[in-house]
Length: 405
Image (cartoon, rainbow, N blue to C red; front, side):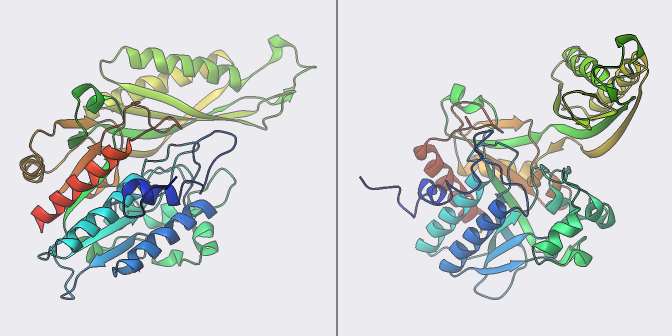
């Protein structure tokens, strides 16, 4: 029985299907600068070289694969995505956009499409799953985060971003805004797996993106008194784990009171984390999203007050620190309308998920294409894309790039 064709999106994804599999969580764990993510970067570079594209890696770790036969990079049409994943993520979040870009470039080359230079960009740490700040590569590129702060970010093992870069052979001292690289982008179109159920209910394989919900991440530290689980009376405890449990329930209650809001506690870390030990501290991470930024921040403030109340009831303290915040993004209206003309019948959908295209939008015209996900599940192993839809997405991307060229 023959396998997937290597010149298709499904064939390209099959080549990396065994890289970064997570035997505990299921799905894939491909944190930035891990062995898995570095292997995927090598895979992409090999395919770009095979296609005769000029490959460079900029000061912030963004890989660029250029088709610029005239030697000019000005006003380029750029597409791309990322290769890192959340812990136990699906197979398509990130890699679908990269593989689709390669296939779209194949179609353009076969058709002899010239015009404007074009490039594929692969951004690092889009998920923020290792160092806590989503879209870190595009934030550094655009100056949306201070390089010193970025270098000091630490992963769960205490290794800083600077240390991880050095271990991978990169030069941390060069990180930061890159107006030359940013200035080459005339338009950026990112293809991504749909993260929700819009397209399956509409009976369409591809959608044009309209906007990204404003969203942010906050770290809440609850501090109490560590002690022995067997010798400390219940009445004598100052247990931050109890406060954390109350806060998790409170987050859900408060978010349900705000129409269209989303609030999630997806990670909770007790210190020291022993079974027979009362924790001395609990850190938890909060994700809050809403299309109105003032509403998002108002909800976060209510959650902060809830944290202080839950902590006080247990004789503990609470401190909340913002790790990142991205305002609601409306994609370039003119570019969006052009995509709708190229792809007649494609619905226009908003997304609640953040993307590098959202960070770039403040500096260059950006747009997005979403490929149908029949399960509606993302950031989990059940994320799915049918092979035929993946090829349809690559064709839609090729048509879009050809039109813009």
